[in-house]
Image (cartoon, rainbow, N blue to C red; front, side, top):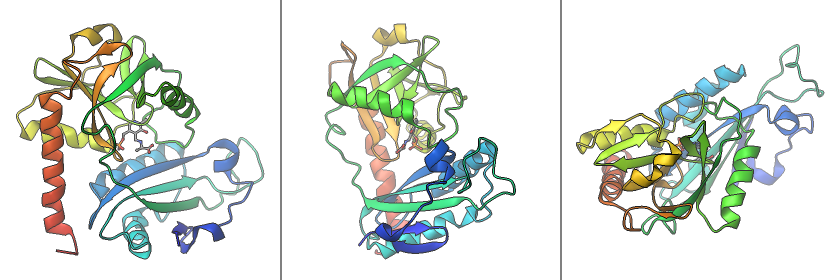
Length: 289
Ligand code: PDD
């Protein structure tokens, strides 16, 4: 049975009832967060919590219980018997249920808080061999730094990639590569890692931030500089990052083969070090050792 979290309670998922007046349903008026459970611990839950609070603040949703997220996330894992597995938690917080009006409910109503967990293994097909992606003009709004549930542009773009047999659609804004529909993107040029700087045009990925640290520890310099789409021919490697798939090597962008068409050495090293970190964190933190 799948047990989910709903407004302070743990319930079988199919017993949860959400109002048709919920502003998440009517307006996509809400934010979300996704974190990964590795057989005993959530990877960098602290950063997910900080980002979730920031998203809430930016959209002015008031959730007094926001600090309870890490604790109920663990409880959800336990209640779903996923403690010794890998899993993803999805959390969504909306501005609550109220008759439809563009203005915020007045008086304020409690937010709707919903979370579920699913078993999920990050080592997907393509994680080893590399994936092909496409570029597309970024037609999203200009607050991509907020993890809003309003993902229609991301969904349409991802679906377009999917229908072409590609792993991801990566956006280009003002001639510069920003990020993917559900991932950040990095490039390697002459041994240096490049990725778009934090701005309103990208989500500040938790994986992205950890890559900076892991690259630094491996002596790989990182530059937060956007890559112009017309300089794509100058790169030797590319990879995407996100919580669910971790680090995914990119071997082709549109019709262009990257490097020799195989995952490159910098990408492989970062993947190896990321995996090693998960194993060593597990040794310290898992309740099952
Ligand atoms: N997506 N950029 C976008 C637009 C994203 O949706 C995501 C994550 C990222 C990477 O962020 P992180 O490393 O913190 O997962 C970047 C999640 C996984 C999702 O929508 O399911």
